[in-house]
Image (cartoon, rainbow, N blue to C red; front, side, top):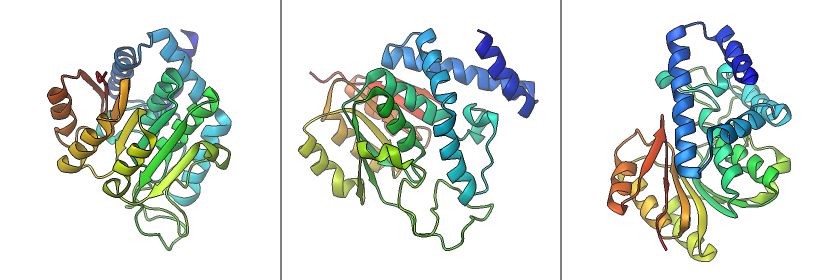
Amino acid sequence: MYRDVKLWLQRATECRNPLILAQAFNYDLNRLALLQACVDLQSRDSKKLLMEIEDDTDFIGEVQSKLSKYTHYSPRAVDFMLFGRSGSVFFNEVTLYVIVRALKPKIMVETGGTPGKSTAFILRAMDRNQCGHLYTIDLPPGNVDNTHLKPTESYHEFMPSGALSGWVVPQYLRERHTQLIGTSREHLPSLLERLGHVDVFLHDSDHSYENMTWEFEVAYSALDKGGLLLSDDVLANDSFSDFCISQGLTCRHVYNLGAARSNIC
């Protein structure tokens, strides 16, 4: 309880709008509900893992340092707090960390990922679990020639000159990571056939209705019973909710991150 109060006092010093803080607090409650429904985590256990990653100063510091070096991002306490449509830097990534820490998946597949924030948090969770391997399929954008990005450019959509997809991932986490460069249509079917099954799938590539639905259909058939189907940007269209309805799945989402458990036997 004391740690919760201290955390919110720290955030309040940077975000002094009480309405925004109240909204962010509501998002935190919604996240706890998602974790309980989809990962069977009680609130106390979820909070423990949330604190674990937020207190991982070496890891967080390295990711923050890379983002600061090549973009106009500046670290703030509110990086972990979701508020309004502006979102935050690490809210979804921290949620993914808790999911992976709790489920301890042996095989996880994600599509998309530039610059690798989600990848980094997933791999850090696997590192702490001492089990699991992540396969990432990503079609990175063109290189950026200038050292620092223009203020109008997003660190999520561009990369430093000469960098590869996943450029914020710390080197020591890469042994549990396999990266395939190309589109999901090029690599996903053959990868899933080779793996045989997956425990968790995360969509974060092309957010068109057609592509999202296609990825869900292909990935869902490879999910083990009780496996987790995850999608970023579920507010982009109705593909995630439509797919879950078609499969009789109960889906949850916090802001733009959706989750549903597989019923496949």
